[in-house]
Image 1 (cartoon, rainbow, N blue to C red):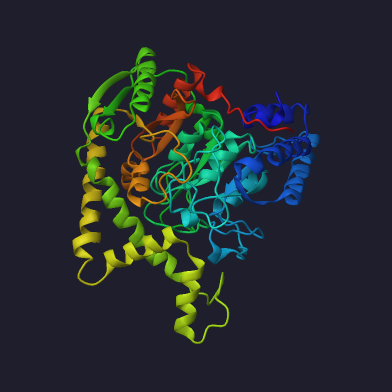
Image 2 (image 1 turned 60 degrees about the vertical axis):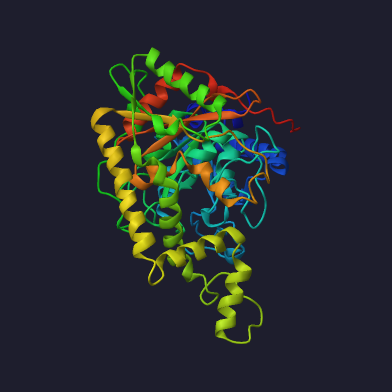
Length: 490
């Protein structure tokens, strides 16, 4: 098996044993990138020179026999919404086409302390607004399982490069499902930690009360290793929570006996593709056969989640994106006649259609005379959605649902219908409203060969329980071992 196909934990053992050097590993992954990138288009920026320097530094530590962190020398890709010092960070937007951050996001500082190798920055929907990675100002990313289909979004690039073995693992961000949905559609593991578990400092904001950084990986063990690295309180982010960070690898126990799994009836309703429903029900049956008890539950306010999300998130985006005015950094229109023209032209030329749509939606929802009718009402609905989950977790340990109502759809299929596109996140937005941790794991395929994801949700800061259930499922199935048949020559 080529080195680029291996997991981070398997590669760590090889690096420790000096069976391979970090430089050789990095070169191996870049050879894979060169082969698949023309087809997948998952990266916006590659940082080869820096990566090889980081790999050499890791090799020096292994050579000396130092006790090296589990991610030392491991090639990782970073979503282009996370600030990387000295490396262009665009949010896949024209308005930030020339932005080079003068500082690292906290998650990057933590990963550098681990000695990781940063491969580059991955494509995404512009400012994380989208479910298909078709809203990038630069390129459309293709799903490695079927190149004519989308990889999900907004972290589609981060999911696709892991699925294509063009990165060992990656970081993304999740506002309404932007890690979990692409993980499901690309057949990899993706996790949104509890809101506040990971610092948002250096994450370019979309909706500040919803955004959270999380990992993509080839298996649940690598997911736990990345969580170990990135979680924790940060004085630079007032929303990060001061709770202990356990060693998440200790929760990788192949046992679900005695755990109660709730299956919400609202998630198996109209709009869910029959094959997806069957595949997810079969996955839940596997957990039941392994000793978990399964019961139907109700989350009655689920139907309001999408409408609530598309008021709250655009309202926060409207405020967050007001800073892109052409004055301090980023794109500025050429030769404006006056200041007001400069503002208007900079923003109209710099932002794409979906971003403009959401800014206008958000500005309207916050405008005089409408704020109580829309934004305030949405916040009340959000509280009801959270209350549903609070009540459910009094009765069950974990909630199991489909991650996405459909497998990957064809590129261009929904671009003319924003509402249909927004409904791609119908399974993931409720947990985002409640700030819950959620993980998507591969649980099977539809007949046309596209992956299906099982979403597991738990109470706030119960990531260990999620990892235990996900790990047990993974250890007793083979879905995560299957790889897309990308016909490319190395």
